[in-house]
Amino acid sequence: ESTSLGEIIRSDFPILRQKVNGRDLVYLDNAATSQKPNYVLKALKDYYESSNSNVHRGVHYLSQKATTAYENAREKIADFINASDHTEIVFTRNATEAINLVANSWGDLNLGFGDEILLTVAEHHSAIVPWQIVAKKKGASLKYIGLTAGEVPDIEQLKKALSKKTKLVVTHHVSNTLGSVLPIEDIVIWSHEVGARVLLDACQSVPHMMVDVQKLNVDFLVASSHKMCGPTGIGFLYGKSNLLSSMPPFLGGGEMISDVFQDYSTYAEPPSRFEAGTPAIAEAIGLGAAIEYLSGIGMQRIHDYERELADYLYYSLTSVPNVRVYGPAPSEIIHRAALCSFNVENIHPTDIATILNEEYGVAIRSGHHCAQPLHRYFGVNASARASLYFYNTKEEVDHFIEALRETIKFFSI
Ligand SMILES: Cc1ncc(COP(=O)(O)O)c(CN[C@@H](CS)C(=O)O)c1O
Image (tube, helix red, strand yellow):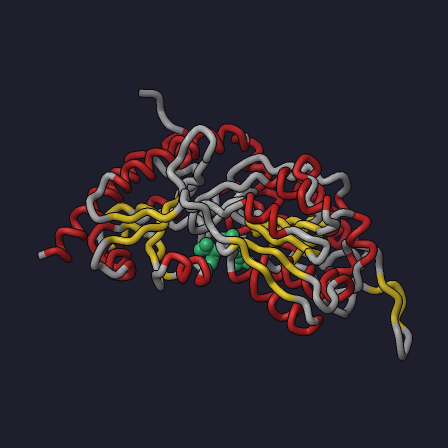
């Protein structure tokens, strides 16, 4: 059997060589955060060793070196998601802050009494709470679409729910809990027909597949570096140029201004308008290195391999008695991401995750995965979740499944 991508690539990730309680670490919590390859770790170290300086201000050599590296990272992101211009990329702390930026800037300017924000019940709290806050302030309301019997967001229901009152559609590309992949191009066409804008939460898609913002034609897109082999503390907002240019600042301070007078200021053009204060320079450069690393492997190759892992994980997990997996069964039409949220009859998911860690070195997530409305929709408070990345292997899935069977036996005595 040919060597899998996971087997070839794992030596790039020093952390994966760790043992947990004497057992090989089997890290299956990648939807929470991914691990970092040597290439990214080296980029961070090199920056602090040879380029560290503040950006956009100094005329001295190091400041110019740091500024060039920082702005190159922005251009790498723009190319990676095929934005038409690098000024459409705004650095934020993470995807959550990127959504808050849109809610507090575009939302404050464009939402009014009676307007509707349309979401799916599967959205992450980061895609829900900022809109609850701004909707309350503006007298707008949130409207949710449910799931089909096949446990994917009901896009026919979404199409019907769109109306002249809909000002914004907020949706995930890939659900961090269901693993479902939504047809974003269609959703954007329908939304634009009623004059609604679309904010795409691409946290679980940008790390795993080619995402082309011009092809999708989304108005906003958010993603986080730490889920795509990059450091924590940096994420980005993509926004169409005409939208960003129309938006007021989110945070005030240095960098985001043009001139400051005693009682008012004029603001810089996007993206600087939305980047107040000293940015996370090293992290941005680390994200740029992560994009170079992923692009070097190839997003299509990563996606194809993860499709294999996704099916293997799903069918291995659903073959275990008393296991209930949430989300759609994979098929030619329905693609699943390589993640499965599940429950085991009469055993709390946290007990499952605890034993898997303590006895078998397997790291999975248990809880609500910041998707409480979705868990309530299923009538449960929590679930366990295994989420894979391209450095995982089928052998690791086998180890997880074997450990799960043993854990279930342990609790069934
Ligand atoms: C779909 C989706 N949308 C937004 C976020 C927030 O990403 P931040 O980098 O924390 O801002 C996440 C991060 N989900 C992690 C932490 S709850 C998970 O375990 O699933 C996400 O999956």
